[in-house]
Structures are given as structure tokens and as C-alpha cells.
Amino acid sequence: MIKSINELLEKARAIETKTLVVACAADQHVLEAVELARKENIIKGILIGDVNLIKQILVKLNINVNNYEYINILDKSEACLESVKLVNTDKDFFLMKGFVDTSIILKAALNKEFGLRTANRISHVSVLEVSTHPKLLFMSDGAMNIKPTLDEKRQIIENSVVIAHALGIEKPKVGIIGAVEKVNPQMEATIDAAELIKMNKENIIKNCIVGGPFALDNAINKEAAIHKGVTDPIAGEVDILLMPRIESGNIFYKTMMFLGNAQGASVIAGAKKPIVLTSRADSTLSKYHSIALGALVVDL
Image (cartoon, rainbow, N blue to C red; front, top):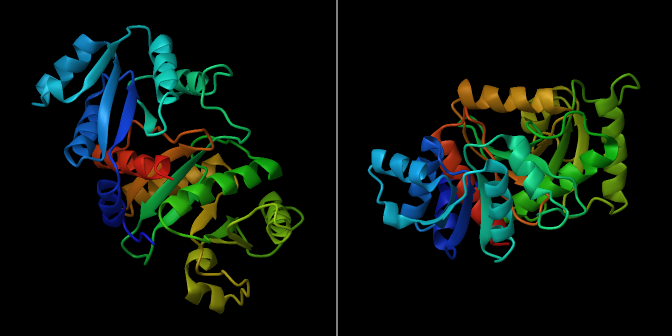
């Protein structure tokens, strides 16, 4: 089981080199991250977009332009669609967003004819290493699903479990997060928690243990769980935090990254291939970690 971002990187270096297709690749921070991953033999890169501009950025960064393959497409929608088509041609290819609006790349990724669509809803899964916590924390969804329904939460759990499996966690513990640790008829998150636990017991949600509802403290801290008398079997030991809606997930992620000195990696899950889609505010290192995570997921 991988317990740190460094271990994640070690595992990504040890597997067969994957191919990363970067849509609209003319972005300095993205190219810096891609080069870090290429140097470690985690990926080979195919850069799609305005090739003249991409090469100008590489030269500015003192990166050898011969390190990469290129496809010159100036229109961003066309570049994204061509990237998605290319990713579909090989099991070891996966996709990364460059300098393009999220809506444009997702429209291409979910194209009914050429896209990466599956029966599942797509969701954003973050993996966080926090120095005060003994293991990695997985969190979803802080970027894609605004106010997920009960069934959408089921799919978000299933997507998150796939990412946990890629990091060697065979039966991850999934905590349904809310403001309190008891079912309250006026709090939708707690009602959904009871239903999701039932689905898990009925083997509708598989390959994990679902518990809750939890407040954040008693989901990840055993002492807090004992102090509050929370008897759920996974209290204090949760691997995956299922957030009630996008605001809570987004705030949690950014609090950990900007105030908690966390290291992180994120991918879009639920498509045929992982999609590396990071925030513009994410550091080059976070983007690099996300590429490594994507390589591990595509290796499954």
C-alpha cells in the first residue's frame, strides 16, 4: 500500500513508461511538470496545439524540443478532440489538459463518437499527503460534481475506489462526510450516508467499506471518534472522504494545500482513461504528481 506521494512517484517510475497526450500544451507550468515526468521515465509526451508556441515555451525553459512528438492544431476544440481520439488508440495513453477551458476538453472527452465516456459519471479525485496524518487521504469531489444526488455519490465512491486500488489499497474505507456523525432528517448528507452504507452491505457498492455519517474529525482521528462515542467500525481510519457537495470538497482541498502544506495529486476518474485536469493555481509539483497518479491508474 502506497502511504506517501514519494512512494507514489517511486511506483510510477517502476512501471512501464506510459504516453501522455497533452491537449493545448502551450502552458509553461504544464510543460514543466510534463518534463519532470519525462525525465523520470514515467511518461513519453505527445504535445498537441500551437506547435510554434509550444516550442517557444520549451526553449524558454531550456528543455530540448526533440524530447517530444507534436501535432500542430491551432483551434482549441479541434486540438482537444484530436487528443481524445489519440488517447483512444492505445491502452497506455492518457490525457492531460493544457491551456484550454475545462468545458472544452470535457466536451471532447465525453464526445459520444470518439470520446472516453463510460456508463459512469466522471468525478474529480484528489490524493493528499498531510504531514500530520499517517497515510494518504483520498477526497472527492471538489471540482466536478456540484450537488451530487444519492446515485451520483454512489458513482463518485466507485470512481474513488478505482484510484485507491491503483495505489495498492485493496479494500479502502470510505467515509461519508457531513457536519455531524448521526443521521439528521434535516441534513441530506447524513440521510445519504445511511443509504450508501445500505448499498455497500447489499453489495451494490463493492470492493470497499462504507461508513458514516462522519464529521471530519471522527472520520480521520481515532481519538476524536472514541471521545465522541462514534462506534462505526471505520471511524478514525477513513481512506476516502466523500464530500457532500463541491463547496466542501473544494474548500477542504485548498485548505490542505495552501494552509496545511499538503502535497497532492488529482485526476478525473470514471472515463475510459484517467484525465489529468489540474487547477491553474496548482503548483508545477502538484501537476507532476498528478501525471504520476494518472500513469498508475492507466496501468491497472
